[in-house]
Length: 137
Image (cartoon, rainbow, N blue to C red; front, side, top):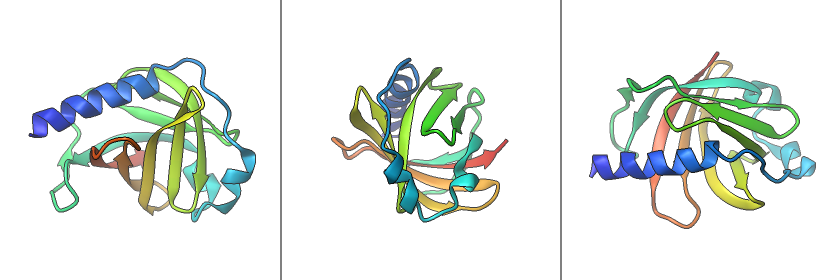
């Protein structure tokens, strides 16, 4: 089952991160993020992951993988899941990424401090979910 989830995650992230041109997000969506937007901005590197809410985090031992969130609503990602860029909006405790103007992946911020974030990643049209811990570079 874990192999299936990792395969699904790989396909999902390659699709997200390999898209070269993505539609723009709305600026007003960024105004009500539960965290300081300045805390979100920057490059984040996956350090741990788990496959279920009650599971245990394990160290990320695959290719170093990062995502960079910029103040203009764009992001880029590099590493295990591929390389590419897109747009995002942040509202409440949710970061939503867009591909071709459509919601593609939704990240729920479980905790965010100056240099560490815990995220729940989910695909809107699926029951697939994984949890990741990232550190700011």
